[in-house]
Length: 252
Image (tube, rainbow, N blue to C red; front, side):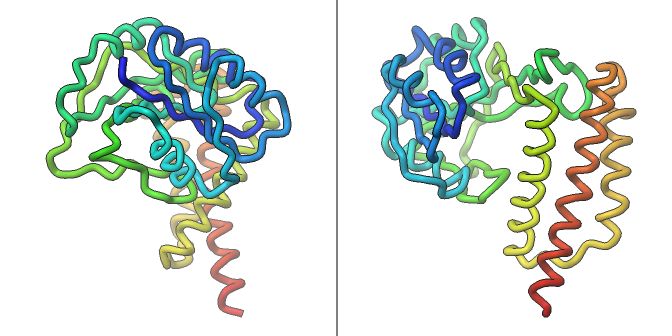
C-alpha cells in the first residue's frame, strides 16, 4: 500500500507504541517529526522502523509539512501521536484505490477521556480529513488549529472505521493543554489583527457550555461530559482573555 504516515511527536512514550502498533500491515513508511523528546519516544519509534526527523518546534502545521515533504509516497496519512486506527478503518484504508489525486478521505473519531469513550457533546461527532495526496493538499502553517489547504476540485469521502483518539490521560495534562492551546490561539488572533473581544470573552463561554452540555447532549456522558463542557467553556474564555492581555501590552 503506497501510503506514508506522518506523525509529529514530543514526549509521547506513554502512547506512541499503541499508535504505531495499529499501523502494522498498512505501510512501510512511517515518518516521525520530533520536536525534542526527552523520554523514550524515539527509541520506541525506532523499534517500529520509523524514520525520525528532528527539526525542532516550528508550529503544528509547519512540522507536519516537514514530514510530508520527507515522505516516500504521495498519499499521506497524518496522525497525532495519541491517535490509533481501529481494525475497520485499517481495512478500509487497505481497500482504497487512491486513483483520484483530488480526493481526500475523512475519518470519524472515537475520543477517549482517561479511558472512557465520550459519545456526546463536542467530542461525540468528531471527524477530520486525514488522508490526502501531497501534490494537491498540505497544511497551512498556523501555530495552532492548523487546517488543510483544499482546492475547488477537492472531493471529500468519508470512509468506514474510526481513529481512536486517547486525548486525555490525566486532569493535570488536560489543564495544561487547555491553557497552552488558549495562549497559542490568542497569539494567532493577535497576529491576525483581531480586536479586543469584550462581549465574546464573557458570552462565548456561556454559549459554548450550553451548546455542548445541553444541545449536543454532553450530560449523557456523566461527570466526564460535565467536565469537558466546563473546560471547553473555560478555554473559550481564556483565549479571549489572553488576547486582551496581548492587545493591552501592545498599546503601551
